[in-house]
Length: 357
Image (cartoon, rainbow, N blue to C red):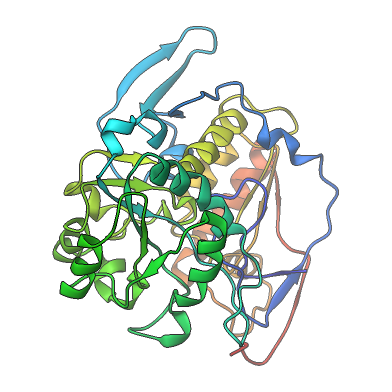
């Protein structure tokens, strides 16, 4: 049973951590195997390709980049080729301070124990590649949705598991910017890893304030984005820092996920099914409209479903609804019907009188 605000697990465009909300949804539907989402005839050993002018894939790019464009004559698809960490040589990395934005937003229990380390393990290949080439890794992430400095959202509980998986002692900073952090970075040896504190302890992170981004960037010589789960958000640590650090490249996880999406979206096997989750319809308009042009089946989940329920005249209680987007939801439902796309919403929900703490 998945939470109404939890993100889907197949073609996920906006993955987030598992929700702690009490309100959940159940949905049973027979679908073809989604293994085709892992099929990509366009995969490359190094680097990755994405459909340059497709709004679906464009939504995945958090930052504007200068790219070389080539045409694939066989498939007639235009690709933009972006540099990845695998394209950097040992001489590019040895002794360099590398700011790595990862998605380490893992679930913790009440005792601050990690209950699922999937996202940590997913970040390991990029980090290992960097440290094996003599880079000094400055690791950054967020955890949860803190309002200012919030101890329960500290990244400290992640240090033991990171150290175990990397086979080295990972150092931890008590902040993500400032003189103390700069001293730790200066003392970092080649092949060392320093984990910064939760970047969302600063409101400037989500506001993508240039001065905050500049302070983050000042810690490093180059930038690697391996946070697929947050790459669609233009935050200081995902987009702002790229204005101050060159080169800025993709990590192996980001590269892999985009490779999968290229194969799934540009040359899909039929029937083509996709899942889109999230709390707001307004931030998914381009993605949903693009998918309606490509998909046979589109499943919606997360908080946005209540706006669609409301558009159908159903009672939603005090659930999240974008009142000014009800007409839009209606039009999307009508467009799906006209195109013969099965747009599926959860058939029932579990109702609660409050959110879990």
